[in-house]
Image (cartoon, rainbow, N blue to C red; front, side, top):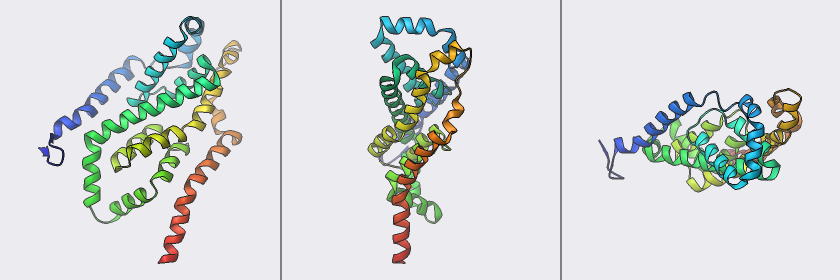
Length: 242
């Protein structure tokens, strides 16, 4: 069966998603025990020595691995983000984490959009009822919704990558809102990694529960509230017009 609007066989358009799923399953099984804090602790000296001798190579390799983790939706993104801070410090680590996550999310977005997202978007646009209403509301508030997906901690990262591709948001808006929206979280994870050496020296494990502390969660939720403000204003204006 062909997609007449694109002239590409439907099965060819699904191949990237099938390939991603297969690679994700295989990689998840093979590396399930590697992306852990225990692995980082046991290999810390070797990693730090390699970083000091081959900084650019390790940075490029780190970014490549992180991009693959995000693009394939593999577990271990949190550990990788913390590792970025441990290896490269707060500034470079935050930049590396943000760039890697943005590239990986963009690759996944394009694969889903090219595979089934475009066809699904067209079906939604030609449909009626509640689904079309939700789609219209999303288009009208695209930037705010995309930023909310990134800032709200209850939204899993892979969901925030997949959903926009399925409902047809603009790719350029997806990219820049991803890069901007994940910065606060990247900075927090990276800062945890900066102090990771001392944590290992004390024989402890990193405490990621700090992410839910008021001093961390409060500012992020504040940014989420600012992102939601345009939606609220449009809603109030719409009610007044009615």
